[in-house]
Image 1: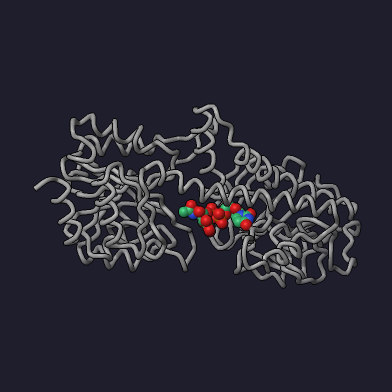
Image 2: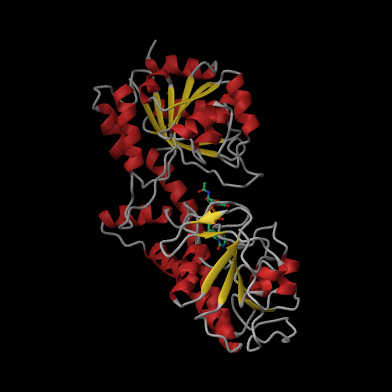
Length: 461
Ligand code: SAJ
């Protein structure tokens, strides 16, 4: 019996042992889902604390409950280890490691290479290796295949190789690992057949494409599409500011078109570890082929400009109330990169903090999901949201519109609010509200800032 047939039978009978390399926001949902589908799984991570947490039936990822992990650990279908020599135990190895940008803005594939070295060291006939980490087209064929074939084993015959982009959307309760269609691109027909068969045991819909490159580019199209459209709507916000038109009214009106339009909303910038990063993997690859990806570069410029645009609007609003930014106390509502998550990676609120501090403002924040944030210019911890705190501030900026914030309290105790997320919707209160573009609204004006500022609230620990 050849290796392909032997592995296929293990997969079909769910006797294949599944290893997942990297137990983060992608890997932990993956390994748990395979365990819940009846496979014996083994998670690998360099972080001993994460390994111990998982082995103890815990979870550090919001989308995976500790109960789900504990149930699989107790059932003997989920274990975790920092011992990469155990990779040989797995019939299928799924790589879910970070693919950030390096300091120079180029792809940092060091996490893939480190994992690959461990896999090569333990590679044996009959294994399939699947890369899920978002990366540039060609990574699987140009990086993984040669490295693994250094063992003398042949891809597509002795072992198998595929790419399948992760589509985890942190915090999304509707679309999960098991009900989100999975794209798979095998190096050979046997690789395609095996990777498809594996994912079909766990995921409702598996879409196989003709090559790893097609699968790699599929993911980059998905996320570049978002980055470019977010850049477009952010530029629209700056256009409406010059036209004196309410961008939210225009976006909502355009969204009534049932076809040919997809609603994106302007904001203070582009955060997260996917959308600001992934398109640059494609831009980098195309530069090596002497092609300039203009849409990616332009969208990146517009999106990167948004924090500075918001800070300029803050300065303009304070100025209208005879207040310089320098010496003003500004409360940021939300440090996370998007609503209802605790992740601050690439969050625009970080840039806004540094820009305001650079202009001499005192910056504090409240974020129910983010307890503290490190800054070179001085760390911050989330302040309890109280009437006194709000009254002690010269400006409140809705940087992330988390659902669980008392916006009525904010409306009735803040004096000035900058709302680039439209987190307040159309609501008004005592505060003067500045949207991301266009004229201010609401407010009684009774709290002109040129009055004596109220006593500073004592920041409670
Ligand atoms: N953003 C806007 N306007 C929008 C949408 C997003 O300013 O209309 C901002 C967000 O506030 C955030 C950034 O862009 O700062 C990225 O937001 P996102 O909604 O794209 O969320 P992410 O980064 O969690 O993206 C993930 C991605 N999932 C994967 O890569 C597997 C992305 O492909 C999903 O489309 C996205 O979730 C999603 O749809 O929520």
